Length: 559
Image (tube, rainbow, N blue to C red; front, side, top):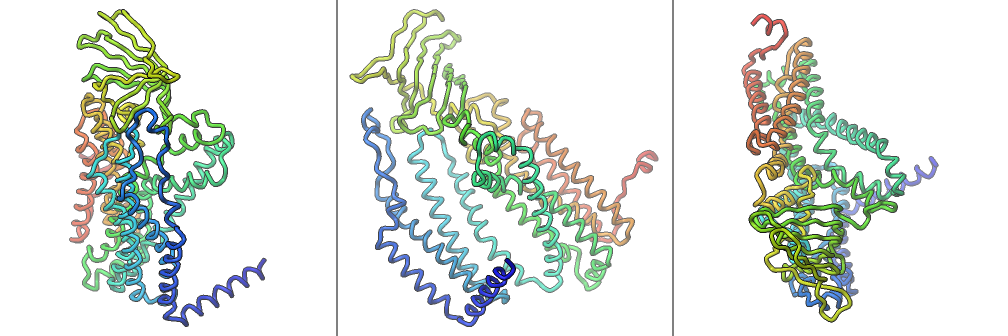
């Protein structure tokens, strides 16, 4: 085994040396990549990504909806297929160039900008087409927010461009700033890996029996934990920053490195600037994760168990659904909502009750229902229609037939609910991203305020929660900058106490917002604003070399 590993290592060393001795190899590799794209185009590579033509049964019932077959999706699919193929080949070329110029950071920045800029363009095109296609072919009637889509695009582009921005910043740093940055990143990466590993191990031990009972394979388990990555990151990022800040600044204080840095004429802000920038960058990463990935990944366990072999709800998205439209005096009861809402799948065991303004039942329908996105109307199958007078049944008949072998009848056009509106009543705000929350609030704007308050609170919470990363650094950094061993212990203890106070107030005010005791935007932002203010005041006192206020039981009793 050792001989085999040595052979692999020697082979890799020879390849690296050959790449470094061939400075123009990346240019030849670019020509080869372009030739491969041309050959792929000649072979019809894009045909594998062209959507199939609509099935004939869609037109059988007078259905006008079908996936768009105009020139726009065909051109977009054609271009994106080759842009993605070239991105894969360009990645190989990029790594060849990086190996050639390593460790010259200045020479690595330009190819990184080119590579990430191209990837940003591919991501932008792919997401724009995916959002357009989702709006055109939506079979649930979901209302999409343009502002949420734009914000999602900007965040994804920011994530793709983050590596060259970080490299450019590091290249512009002075020696002392690089030293502080490296000293901070080492424990930060270690803590992130440690907390990620601990989370996965604990979750695996807790759910191993469920995986085995549902016969979930290793690949599905791996994909589950990969999807859970954003949720883990949002959760562990604040405590990771806290421990890293306490460790690095505590060590620098103990070894008098901070005193030496300040003695060179640097201000406290200049010394701590790399740590604050990392905290802000982690807040951005957390916001991008918490925008949609982290909330939706929290419900992946139930979906994985349902879709796996042996799951009871393999073909059902929701079971036992009720939706009340107070404005139209209409109530829906749905037994099963399928995962796929395209034909021939229908909502099963549906009952629609229409009441008058006094709450008396006027008419009702039973059967299996399907919603046509083209005309935005409902059709009921294999059921009955009942009429009432003064709340009492006066007539019942089976659904009308139209020369086909089962009963079918279109519901009145005044019944304007969509599948998304019906399903939204069963959605939990804790597991909804920003686009889904906005869609819910738009579809249910006529619902009572007490029902919408949890969704508004979680909407603002999606943006407020990530800033815990920066808040932690704001109050932990000045408490860790001390000039005596005794002060170091007290500062670290105070920072840890502040962290737990932040978690307590965060959950407390979140529930106050959900129960309408406070406005939603105030409830989620108030703890962050208060603790940020405390952190800024502590930093101002530390910058002026003033003693930080000390809280002790003795001083409190003396007052």
